[in-house]
Length: 146
Image (cartoon, rainbow, N blue to C red; front, side, top):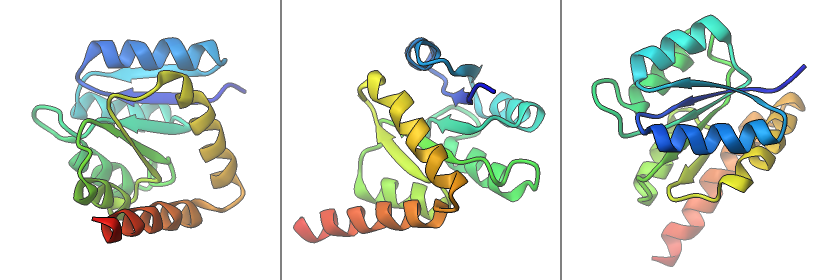
């Protein structure tokens, strides 16, 4: 069965970039242009992973993540934040909220499929908390350098 990725981002070029690169790697891509439709699609389709923008009008990515993680139908879906918000505190907030990774824009779209595959392999092996712990350790190390 193909990996299904839901991309929630208000920027059509970013959704297209994700779609082209993930589909080229044999994944199915679902898209939503805002938070409410992203939540609806996640609940209806139960994707394997969500790539989630933070800065969207109306319902931002932080709230979308909270709602996905508070809903028993969608709480197990790994969330990767995909955003221009590159500050360490934003990255920490994403991981603290329950995200498993945080990719800052601009990003290399060719790296998306390997990131998704590795993440899903690790989650399947029960390493979700390890992943989040590693991201928090990376952030701590970056903070100590500043």
